[in-house]
Image (cartoon, rainbow, N blue to C red; front, side, top):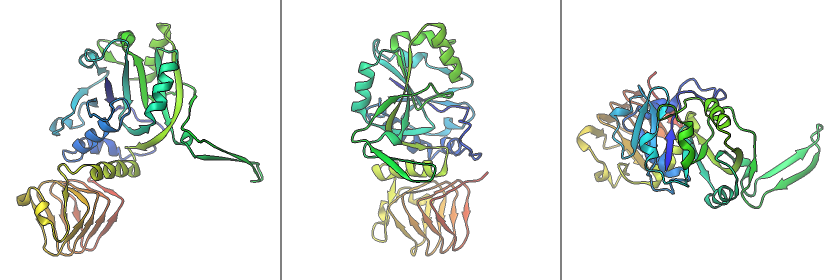
Length: 320
């Protein structure tokens, strides 16, 4: 069983004050794409979309229509219902919902099968992917040598200070970590519980790809991938296929506007003359796009008015 937790506390190295992930989670038209993509991108879910998500209270997720089970939490993360669905002697997986990762499943299977531990902490490191070259130079920038991996690698690492990308816990000992049937909010408290219960914890880095969903580049890249991979609720059109747009009564598009690729529209959208929208793109509720504007691979948030002849590319435009 897999639990995806979107944590209240954010990594101190993020350096992003916009909190884009919270904006995405609270958006009724972005959240379903985000949640579905997270549940399908995680290793342990085997791409079946069956994961459970835990989201902080007050993030507005109750207004979003999504097929995934969502658990709101205030302090600690309640997991008693999730635990009952996990078979004994299998891994219970807690994934960090801020990051979308892609891992070599066969490699991770092999590592987990051979490791002697009650808890395995896993972080994804792109530098451990196959065919990545690592160059060694002197202080005078002279080449000493280089190293190339021909297979994805996994290697031991120090236990991190904050929640890792993925956490594997033996299901039959999970109750030892719970406080009032909930997972501790702080990772340090979780590690302290491991020590007090004399449990073996192993930490490793493994080759894979990673997107930080609390950054503009990461969120756009992830949503673009999801929009391109699924046609459900996406409106793809060009000059010859306007009939593919759903909710025609709430989306007004000028006859001279041109749209290409996958575009997801909210309600009450107005697209003016000679506008060009190149997907993948997401246009929120109550958006007005004036004449001649160009939007390419971007998210336009609720209530935004795009000025005449404005060019928006690879960006997230939201209020606040």
